[in-house]
Length: 560
Image: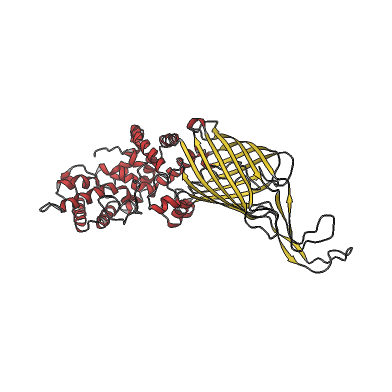
């Protein structure tokens, strides 16, 4: 049997080209439209060859008297590539079966490690949260889902403990629909809506875990026997956790996002260069070939081609002739695939092991991923909206523009510009809608080297906020006025602190472990806070986990 060495580009890194929305049928402009978005991996990985055959058949039909059988020389090249029993098909077989057996696990594991070198991801809440380690918002966000627990404060007076859950719109959509939610550069494009709405949209919610909330209830009678004052209302604690804010982020431009066209282009160039490392996986590829040879009648000789192959090729040409859209060709090829790749083949325990080794050449994969990240230099631009519910203060709406520039080995510089307005203003209030305006900047640089399993990133940040009026403190109904026995039946608002400029500086060290774990440790200084006057030095610490392979928990895949 002829030994075939699989192409690394098909084994690990094959992914369909970006396409515009289509009717999922063959068109001269987009000949792969009928197969590129198919949910069956064998159809996706053989899509190029299926499209080539359908194109050749459609072209032959336009010429009177053309041979529309599998003997037509114009069809032979495509049919040879669709012959699953040929050693030439080994690379596509590995790619198609790896999605079921091992590929998702290998890619997910590698992405978690290599993705830690991204300096653009914002996993914790913004600077105005009662518990945060971030003074400046980054331009990127989680790929699928992240959970961050932070304690501290940088602009607030109250140190809090905050849980932040962040997700990406497209990845959640894929998780719900079951369309390979754990993909990045291997994503099958679903069209304009996914590219321009879901992909760049990131959502997060902040929960205050340590700040009490309360509700007002009606009461009657005296508060104690020492006063005749009747108490009509009282504030009752209702819990120690509440939703303190919701954030929506839209990435107009992020070269680090592996779903973006820019990153896919950079990755495609790395796929080409990876072919130089073909010898490194020869043994693993041959191991797959040896397992398949026990079940699949491989043959490179025309004379030895089985009746099964001849019948399958004849049927595929007939279906392509009968239906120019390509739909019947897909059905015919899928039938051929099922006849060859039987349950005996797919259930062979040695096949899963061999395919796993073939796809898990981690060193080669990681280096190529880093090289693609190195090409992601340049501008990043994100718009962010925050709905804030600070403790005992009015709700706010914050609008923020985030711009960043990545210098590759020199690090990344990020700028924020934001304006905050109050959600509602009571009648007779002595303040306007504007809460504050702010600008801030941060410089990030990896200290330990991105190729190491555990990385350290240094961040230096500065923040300036101008507030035209002092902060507003909501005093809930039922509160007793200080120094008196008078209750406040309807609640009230008071100005607290001072108006003017708030200056904050922060130095932060983030420890990035394997598997998506990040531990930020920061120290900050401010000339005052939102409620209190006087300088303040504070510490911030947190932990976050970036669930880049969470899909397996929901899909039940044992490989995740």
